Image (tube, rainbow, N blue to C red; front, side, top):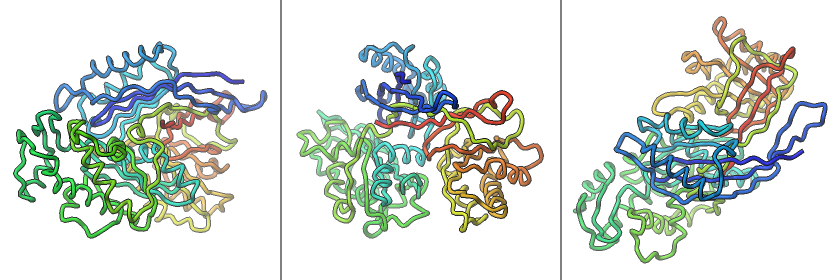
Length: 479
């Protein structure tokens, strides 16, 4: 039996805001005597909004009224009644996520709609979402090669290295198309980002806010440094003297990017890379076109295999928070009063029984948790463990200890410990966890679930008179 639902994706970014409407055909593939297994059998993009600059009241506040007006107008243009929208996702990213009213904005926007994923993404998670949206993960899985995606926006470049479903590493640099803003007509410089001001001073360039450019070539020394930093970020060339200046939170630390050959690009500057010899290099009122042109001529295209991206500027626009309704397997372990749980992001790890090492697993969990840290704060996650194939008692104990040690910061916060597996081991693993957790600590361990990094899960109340739990796995569908 099939049914159709409408879904909306809204991306409120540092520079731009946009919306996408999608019609999803949902099909229950379970038999009449089984619990539901809801899957998306068809996805049709029915409307893509225009792209506007994210409206701000000041440096600290999002202009919610203009965001709401934009969304309402786009619904009207699409001929859609907001009450007919049943699911979707709102992603707020970059500097916009730091605004004082960011949480209220996304919660209010999602209030009148149905089953929404609402995610505030820091630079690491934003890089992963963009990489998936650009198609880097799909390409990596199909070609069985690791891929680095560079998502180059207005203020930052977020990098994510993927190997199929596995996130190898992330990085972020203050390199983007709106670090310098120029009036397209008068060529007057209206804004220069702080790090660019420092670079201008070091390069001894006579440029400041209020300067009138004589030509685009005046900016070449600045653009050259930004391009060189991005070349360095993927392991090309001698380290630029200004490389460390432009690191936002961290460079790649868990891998050697020079060993990864395949590169994808997303973000607004990726669109600029495709524009041949624009008549006005400041057509967007910034340096995006200049940066895009220089990147297209960079050593990245000489030393790496640049793969065509499925999406560029729309890579982090979420078309839908689709979900598959499943139930856990027959083995479940959880404490009372811990459920239900909603909108929990998934941290995905694959282990090998024969190589299961407590300290190594703990270190991997701690490293991956950093992806979900936003402005120094760590939110709760579901730790998804794949690959526990018929483990021995000793291997389960080692896994439980590794999870306990790796999740130490979450446990100190007092949030429920959530562990998910794809193998039928939840009861045994949960009991092992119980012995290592503080007395009466809230936890849930469920099995027979399939999920990946970037997914979100809901865990409902136990089904009456049983111990199985209804679980919704929400996958952000990128357009």
